[in-house]
Length: 304
Image (cartoon, rainbow, N blue to C red):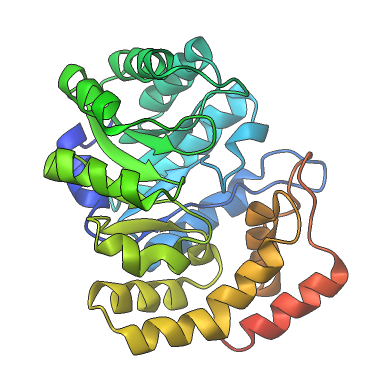
């Protein structure tokens, strides 16, 4: 069973940097649980404020239902209460409900509600989808505002009134005016998470809008850099922030932006280059090309 109530979970993840672990696969494309557990344990040594198992970076979209439960349970068992574990959740409403229940049964502390599969809904339909998932679980829920799931402040406020366990809002859409309206209206009713790729690029301006944390995919292979960068953001150390952006984050993003799906592929490439191979990405994603691996290797340099 989950160890934190929704409010406790929201407070915990808002207190520091968040890690979104990749999911390890074997050469035969099966979930590789042993190395995954070792990776979770290693990440925890670097003290993330929360772990998001089977999220976007964890290739939630490629996992079978049984694999999903196995991934979440492994993360929960390795975390052993050291940090809250949240699980990805998505697809259509009925499937999302089943994933939410599976996450709760596996011991997760919360869920990240990803956009519904494929379709674009009207505000009322999106709200009904989110409400149905919230009411299907006792876990705290964080809405992921992006792609085909973008809601306005009025809809979000109404959802929060009806769903006490809706405790977080992750923004991957990047509309500063909308984000300002949401924070102005909701204040500390929610914990706000930065979710634009690569999150480090937007961390400083988002901090001014009440977004105290963000999900760092870079944490998977350069946790010390990720933690140092986050600390610089929180103390508003512009010199250190822009040095990190110039020397690593922006060149890294340049590689990531070359092909669709590289937001995940480049993380697994980084892990391979620092000696923590998690296997290839699953289709329809593709791995980095050899010349891009060389670019990333030079960029990482001695940072690991």
